[in-house]
Image (cartoon, helix red, strand yellow):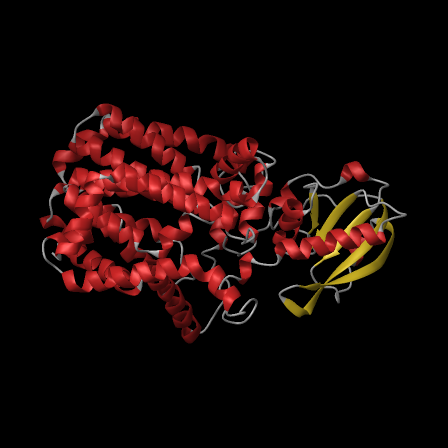
Length: 512
């Protein structure tokens, strides 16, 4: 082990609370000083938070609950919407360190912490407020309490583990893999079978209790979340072998960028290696392999046969990093991991510096600007606001209706000064987002709407024009990121009716 790394790990062990506090301060400050807009998913989940429920079109409710909690306390600003990521991320680091220390030792825990902090994925999870930050936090809490329950024999930890997994399930459906992997681990050894009589059911009870309201909500909404999730694995679209390989390559490349090339490669190699000799590992390491590497290998295999998304396997790397850290301390791959850390921290610093670098080199909205998704939304909505004020001085639009992607509706809802409720008209007639589940603008019968469409050149569907007395195109607005794209603004007078929801909820094969 290199002396410099030993010194850093010793500092971490002595000053863990100070390190977490500093990281919290740095990451929290960054939220308030950067000028990056919310991306579409963030405004979409923020709009969810204004109508709290037990479930939503595509995901369980945790992300909406957390955003609502923080905005109630701090207001509807970009930084406040994102602040839960830093809180959850700090809790994550504490439990990640504690889990590694409990299974190995303080030195291994410090090395694992060094490694995960060197990944851009950890940075992103402390900045973008989507379903992933709460999932990661409650996932690692589940792993911590499960290892305490299994190896410290504390009965209460089974309950804490179940509550953590229940919270993870309320964050994202993939958390169901935790109890499934636990079953696999317990079935490996007959000496663990007695845990099925009592302890496992103590663990399972909170999970079931968290699952019940989600199931009831879906039962009342034609199982829309289930159908949406099933759509991710649809085999209806036939693509060539070359296209499949291209998709698989893209997802694997995404792993290298999120984990850094060296760390991601070593975790994958170590995962295959430890899985092959699973029966010869200690009980603690068997548990870690079941809770991450086996899932990671399964994802890699599935990736060659089924369309996947690059962020899906992120929780599977957590215990993989712990296991790699233990191998590192034993003397394996030390030089390689050293270079991996150097590359990783360079990528992390570069990521934090991107907004300044893009501005300094005047690369905004170019093909090589990776921050384009975080820019110009506020500017675009400001243009909408000015057009509303200029064009509607004599007539008044009582509500706003959008045609296009759900992001258009959610971004208008967040960035318009009054945060109005935005309605969305779905051309296909089915349910493709949360906006089709919520009630339509039936309270505005007889009123006037401002219609905003993301394609100024498109003809409004006849089904829409039929439900208004009169619709007139009043303006076009250029997309700030693309001069070839225009948004259309229409004034629609006299809403006569609103289409009834489709009898069978449809889903859009669109991953969030």
